[in-house]
Amino acid sequence: MIDRLIEKIRKTNAPIVVGLDPMLSYVPEQIQRVAFEQFGETPEGAAEAIWQYNKGIVDAVCDLIPAVKPQIAMYEQFGIKGLKAFQKTVDYCHEKGLVVIGDVKRGDIGSTSAAYATGHLGKVQIGSKSYAAFDEDFATVNPYLGTDGIKPFVDVCREEKKGIFILVKTSNPSSGEFQDRLIDGRALYEYVGEKVTEWGAHCIGASGYSAVGAVVGATYPEQGKILRKLMPKSFILVPGYGAQGGQGKDLVHFFNEDGLGAIVNSSRGIIAAYKQDKYKEQGITPENYADASRMAVEDMIADIAGALQNR
Image 1 (cartoon, rainbow, N blue to C red):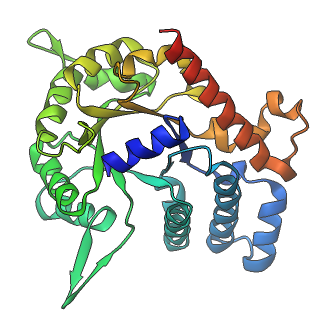
Image 2: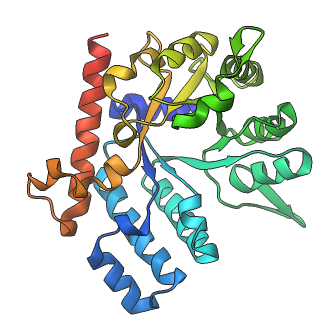
């Protein structure tokens, strides 16, 4: 799957991923109204509104981007109806030829970790038949429980030719409370980065990159520089662009000299772009919200390309 992701990045010239992390407050009123008329002000109505909102954005940007990253919590808050919207979103993105990174941040051990890996990336055996459940292409994984929690995911990745992104240095302000702690003079995130390289050593694709990647926030460019050296064959998923403050100029050290090695995520900066004054001034209204998302993607592509050219 890492080779397919790289192929899509090269084809689109866009090392970016759109985070499909919809809050109900992001969904324009006209979409909510139609959904609530059909299903009432219920979890089913909310899930329908989110699904229709996602569909509009995907239709508007799918030719520009290689991948999407739906964050499962935004769907889980509406219960089973929300999870059905998550599944419909994953399936629709696949129909549009997009790579899907399931932002699920799972982390457990033993049979529990294996079940998470099966549910999101693998196939579950039922009698003589097997079925893919959510069937994302990649999943995000929390490494805090150590190798016991990661190995089941790596095993499924090798069997199903899927991939994972392991949380190493996250973009949130308090990430340093644990991730920056010094152990024998080195930050904890450095040790985790070394383990990412170790865990991914037997998952190298034809591209030379591993199916075991890392999450490193755009808000920490200096740490990104260190981790890029520690994980030369790992793709880095970079959250924190846009709404969290990251800019193209902050990202150059996340990439290798071949121009690959990183894929940058923007969520609300794209999916809620219609709320920004920048796009309102260009005639965007809630009715054509998806046009703003397309503009935001184009602006992000240009920003990152310019930064990489000038590094």
